Length: 328
View 1: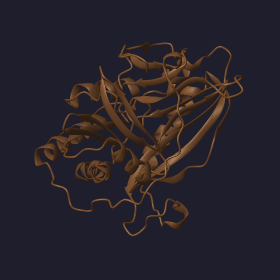
View 2: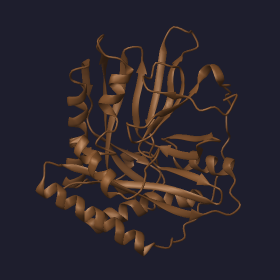
View 3: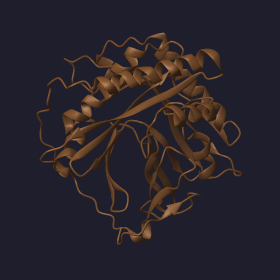
View 4: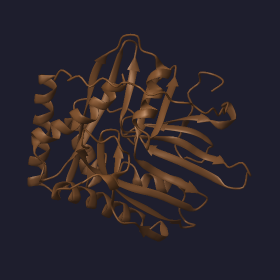
């Protein structure tokens, strides 16, 4: 950006880089392409030693998270809610914070993710490494994915290839993944054609494994990018089902503001080098942190279904936060 003004988008017809919050009632920030400078540089990454020490458990945070998860399970058992995503943030004190070094470590740790640094003087500094694509759009053709289910990869395996791993998924994770896939298929049914849903596969992101199902199709003439975004965001992978009921439960019970965590970000309506095709690359803002002076706020969460075990859900958020802590 060439100045510090704040620009917003509501209809997503502009060209630039978008940074959108979880709450769809709040405005999405846009860095307009006409006010931006585009630079490309190849980074040669060194090998880093990541801290393997055990991190201190915040007992109060643990107790609060388990209570909210228990409340979510009760809600699922007595209402129409099938799934709700419960999250939290964790404060990490920083010393000798080097932005470029942390960014390089994120690139090294999350080789299969979209890794970013985003800053605006009126908003703040965010970093992240997200394995989840919200949308890839080129003209009327689009690709998206459902991503759910989490387990920790074997400690002695650093390979990013899941074919070499002996992965067994439990019914809870498989059900959670299917809920997300079914939601996406239903949401896209009235605004797209030629919908293709691939087989579910296992992918790796840092020290964690996830279930992923790729989806692609063609947008109907009556639809536009805004309708596509509104159909998908927030997905059940970051919110729940039914979406509106789950979102209301989250806002009422999480007791903090997610801000841009589980929102989305990326390139919006940028023209390719030949100038003929406009494309958008949007990613769900997962595995992210907000830097404020000498502290980092790390955001983590997990999907809760009727088969969830509260203590295990807490452990999942700990596993997600630990990789970020090692990077810091």
